[in-house]
Length: 465
Image (cartoon, rainbow, N blue to C red; front, side):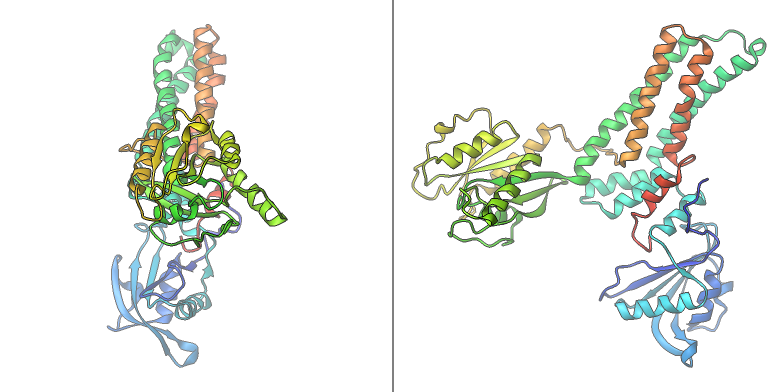
């Protein structure tokens, strides 16, 4: 197992495990051989007892004291004692639940460090859980994503990954490939004992493995949408009602609304949740003929957002005729995934939508000012998501980029091996092609992984996790 430099398993580490701010409670976590010794030096239990001798999974009430200042009481706390190996890190773990607040949490943490612990590095508690066999790398990645979960659907699926359901699927494929590799090696090394092997019979199990791996990749694409969300950009010429619609979709007054031309000079983004899918709504500066450098920059930002949008809400004004700016913008976005929103239907109609020659695009008429038709936009957004194939599934899958790359490589190796078998290649050649797939499966679970990937995973965790 490759270790990350600086993440010394022999040290006792400590960190604030909760957000260090004004709050009802805060937690300081300690892990390592000296965890119980350290807490015994700064904790005064209500009932006089040796904290080091207490049973695992026990909770103790008392006070944190500062012996350097005549046992001055720092805070009233609860101390959780969890003994190796049945802990998150598989080391002795102590958690101190104190009152929240930056001063008290830092004071307790400094007392812990003064007794011989060191400040934990980002993700170091989870790193110890991984190194000590408590988690594999697939489960570790799930923990990282749980912290960033944006919906209950995402959380539900990630907890299943954390429990090891995906790990068991990968382990099953690994064992199947391992069995094939072992049979090929045995046939090469001990042909007199194994007899002639039916190479063609290996095609079906290899095809099954490849199909499962491709399925995981496809499901992970849906997971990406639940994880990263979709971008939805509201565009249109100035004073068409983009900011009012933006506020309606957010159900709060997030941006300033005015009838003055060009009020919005920058892009503003917020996220809403539809059917568990986060959608990042972006309000852009109104399209106009730029008259100064500020307006030029605003136009560039608006166009940049349009280029990267998953969904575009193209807004028109019911009370005004089609303008050359409407036509120019429509020509830019018409080949994208566009929803046409005709606003201000509470006013007299002067718009002739036929002038844009629109076809095969969803259209909804609204009054953002009077909150009319906003629900229709939400329904169209929902249907638009489903048309993209992003249907809610019982089991979503969330994978990091490095995991996807390994899965793609695995599929390619298996395809190449199947082709070699069909072409009648030698057993040596087939084995040479397939054996790296076994190494890839081990890497996927973290059994054979390089330091750079480990560092990238764990340093992205927060301190205290």
